[in-house]
Length: 277
Image (tube, rainbow, N blue to C red):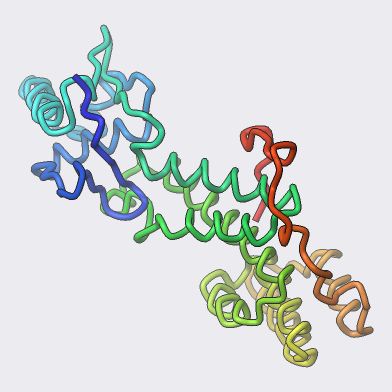
């Protein structure tokens, strides 16, 4: 039987909770078995792959028995219906609302849908709540494991995309506090053109035209030093618009989400395209 109160978290170190209580997941190998299943959540993970991911070249006859024992212990903690045995492997059977990575993706879709419907402040809040689910790096204790790399990269790309969209909403409502956050992001991601462009725009709207142009020059210098490339035409165009005080760079007018959403505004957020950071 599957427990309804279980919550699993991978947006940071691996955690499991039942109501208000943290669950003990056991030794490192058992935690790794659960993490591999979570990377392919609701998909059947072949027994051979589990053995290879957890034991690697040390997988022998005893490893298969150890795997069965770890799965048995995990079922006792998470509920006997949580891990389903298939002819050639195992699958983790949990609802989307039981995994923080799924909750994050759903909340981001809802936030973007709200923004597309003109509910900018509402979407901004939904995106902020989604980003607050992150406690550190995804699958933090397994970030060096080859089997986790693809999922870690996917989740991190989703985080950066959501962060960029939320910052766009901050800029649309004229939030000057976003400058400091963007300055930190520009240091953390020195070659990320999207964050550079947003920092330039935020500085310009804060009345700091010279600082905005300095950010462009520093970014251009870093690009040349690291790869011999120049800024894209889009970023160069933004530089020229800032230089010439383009009126279209001003903060947009009053946002439409001062009015309540109606039933006609509600759409399935799954139909909305994910935005690039």
